[in-house]
Amino acid sequence: MAAPTPPAPGWTFLTNHTHVLVCLAQHEAITLREVARHVGITERAVHAIVTALEKEGVLTRTREGQRNRYRLNRGYRLRHPLESHRKIGDLLDLVEKP
Image (tube, rainbow, N blue to C red):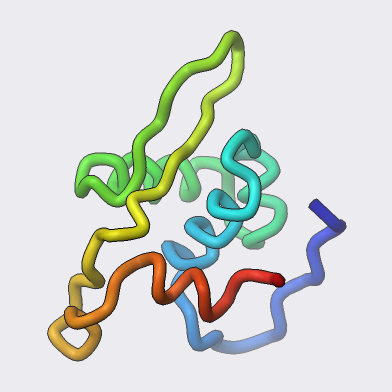
């Protein structure tokens, strides 16, 4: 994964949860430390997000040796009523690099 570009000041359109999902979608064996660096938040915050997403069924985490591998449930429906007709995969298709 290329060096991250620092986030622009102020707000962004997507949440940190989405940013974490994008990183995990692009590299399922990425470390949480690397995700934190790319997203621009603490490793602890990334861990909390991943734990919440795993508990919700958005992703699964499997241990491979000393590393974790993350697999996303692209069929999981977005939670907010405005987007509930869409799935995680739809969102990732929109924002992932080609």
